[in-house]
Length: 233
Image (cartoon, rainbow, N blue to C red):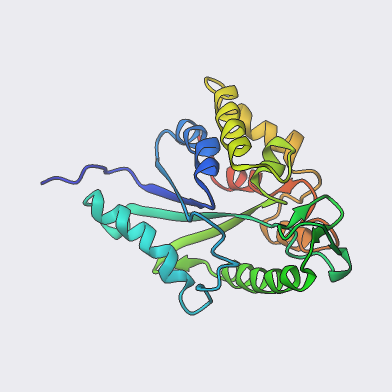
């Protein structure tokens, strides 16, 4: 049986289904000459207790391998793996972690509040360790790999909203995609005007920037660099 897809695939990995809803169809239109595929990890693998540097590549590759097998592709048909992280305030100083009234982590642009301050410190330590490790990689199982960030998360970067409920995330993701129907390339200028907010255009410099001070709580993204590095026409 012939393979179902002969175009090179860019395999995007995001944290949740609503992230996929907001972005996938926009990317499909912009990069119409490539096969764009979004998958989600259904949570943050960088802070997951079952994931560490010894198995994270395998965890990510399993998603790619399932897609390859289901579509009767070859590994060489996957041109690139692109992961988009929520920073979740990971790099803030511990002085910006405050005692709160909820067991949930409540984000603002200046602090994270939680009843259990040590819980936040432990989460940040693990997440920072994992993100820094993944940032050193240029491939996963021989497939080119790059990682980008949304700060403090995708909802914040794209909608300027923090601490959304699951229902609000669904509503916002649907509305965001619908806004760009027929004008998908305007998404790139949207990022530059609304979500970058001072992040340098250099990939290494952008990651240095987000690790400074409170930037990983503020509204930022370096996803615009993907479009600079990967022309779409």
